[in-house]
Image (tube, rainbow, N blue to C red):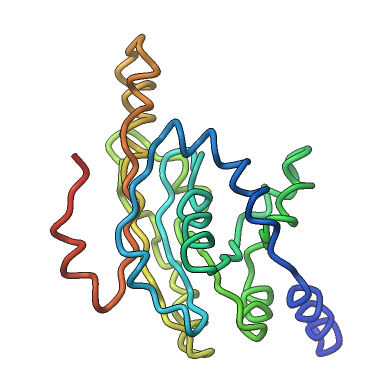
Amino acid sequence: MDESEKIKSESKLSKFNPPDIDMVDKIAAPLRMYFRPRYFGIDEVDDSRPALYVTNHTIYGLTDGLLFGLELFKRREIFLRPLVDNLHFEIPVWKDWIPKLGFVKANRENCSALMNAGENILVFPGGSRETCKRKGEQYKLIWKDHVGFARMAIQYGYDIIPVAQVGGDDAVLSSLWRFRLNFHHCFQAASCIFLFSDSSLRDLLSHSCK
């Protein structure tokens, strides 16, 4: 990418305005009501400077990022710009919605543009492979050598905030692999989402989803 294209890309990304929070809340309402997620550590997040939020994918990634991203937006006015696989931009209907929700194609150039614009960014180092876990891989991080996010954070002076999403793998596995008939019961597995910061990491590790 030459300098003019870089400036054009950064300008386009920096002009993004977060969607109306009530609209996003309505979109997420059925998922929030069904999964009843719990959040730990959101009040410990430093909202005085942008950060890079790094999280795991659950199987199929059905709710990954949306629920805790909305909660972060509602409670701390921090809007996350997710860096996602190009496949998202090839799905009919969905591809028309995601730019309005701040989704950006995952590549180094876009990440650099977002950081230059001072945006809060969400990344999934496991990518699409981590959403397609095999039996026995539940909650396993399949990041391999995907550490480019760390290099970018160092280069731009971004804090890295690890986020752990727990519950999604259990919900999917209980219905797909155990073949239970009561799907409603299966998918009522609570989701626990942890945001780790320096002041809260020790306390959060003592919590568990019951």
